Amino acid sequence: MNHCIVGDVHGEYRILLNLIAKTPLNSTLIFVGDLVDRGEESAKVIRFVRQHKLLSVLGNHEEMMIEFGTKFINDIKNNRPIAQDNIWLNNGGKETLLSYGLVSIINNQIVPHPFIREFIFQFEDDIEWMKSLPLYIELEDKQPSGRTVVISHSAIAPVWKLRDDAISFNNFKNRVLWGRIRPIDSEPIFNVFGHTPQKFTPDTHKHYVNIDTGAYKKGEKGFGLLSAYCIESGEVFSSSDIDYAKVG
Image (cartoon, rainbow, N blue to C red):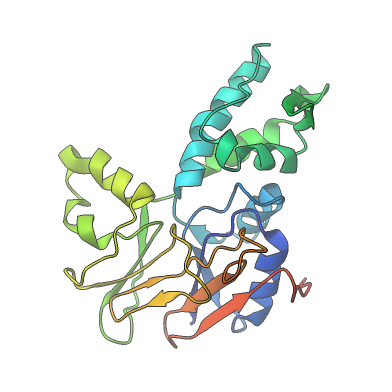
């Protein structure tokens, strides 16, 4: 069985479909988080992943959506003014709300749709699903070199020893979701992660792969690609919005 690890999708649904069309048939897809925000179709990405029961780890953008999306829901249900400015909205959350059809942008202000209470349930249910996402996935099958394969949002090797340390859990979680340190070869694992966009191609080494190639950065030279790394073969597949191909 092929395990193909997909980089940060960031709401780029069409690019995701094209990438899947390129990966080996019947591959098991696993995502490194950041399924949402920045791109225009986050709701479709989440629906696709959930409908096909695909695996993903938690990313920092899911964490932000859980926190600030929950506040958005509570404000709507309690007839309170909604926030116009927070870290989530300023980093793609606004596009995510638009993708769910919950708001409009009028004079640069986020305006809830008049009947938002009647169809906010999907957004709320997706947030509950995000709460169940793990910080990392450890595969049973090893990489060809014999290393244990670990999928996480950011590089996990620097804090791998802390994974079962309850006292250090908050530090562990923060580093796994937000860290930008290139992993040294200090642990007997093969880590596939994203979070920090790489130009042109994934950053591939004997002990790690950074698979994020900046799918949402369309128009920026060297970016605008969504990539997947297949564990068993070591192959890399990439797609862009230009070579979009529809799949069923």
